[in-house]
Image (tube, rainbow, N blue to C red; front, top):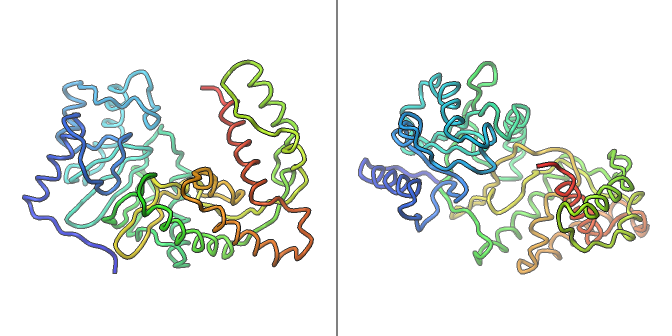
Length: 338
């Protein structure tokens, strides 16, 4: 049974009041509700109209609003004119979330509608990708995701509707977090297996390791940013070694896991793609206090044993994969222009 929750008018009014207080900076709600994240602004219709009509700047100066980075008011007016006016169901939404896309929450019905935001940090291809991947996941039942109810990809505005899961987000200091990951890791590994695990070299993935190392050194020499201490000589030997590759989530982190009383849900599959499995686990492995290395290493070693037997020299160990993935991520950050 999926968690459902009904709201009286009084309870709904109290919720909207708390949301507006959060937006206006009067207080920070004590409890997480739906997808509460301090980098996101929660608005109801009245607050949004106030932001646009009265030219009030709500402070959308963050990575999610790159339409007009220097003019958040202009960005809001453009959004309102190009998207919102054409959506009939917009005016009846209880809560509106503007993030990488636009989400409208209908709390009494337990429905969330996610709208594609033109010009945002997510492409239409990624938006459509989430729908396709989640349909695939629902049919496999290996991972819990909010149930898709409908979608429209034929004409603007593009959107899909799914059920609202009333749960809590994990946090880095939540004592539950490691145990939740311990339950999720075997399930997502089964998901990889169901989609096929390929063992590929960097060269087979089209990655020139020598060029990456030179780009990293060049960025450090130019003083672009402070680089971490990395054993580049050892990393240089990884080019012809095999690394497990499958259909990954692409953004597996605490902000994309919802915990209910009986299930853990994995959300936001827009950036799902076939890539190195280690990219899904890098963030949680770098958090040493969660101590999840052995859980992932056990599954990795079993996969290696089944595939290669005793001939393991051609395969990167989990520790080596972590080192390589960390290097590739840091190289990307250092060489990308702001």
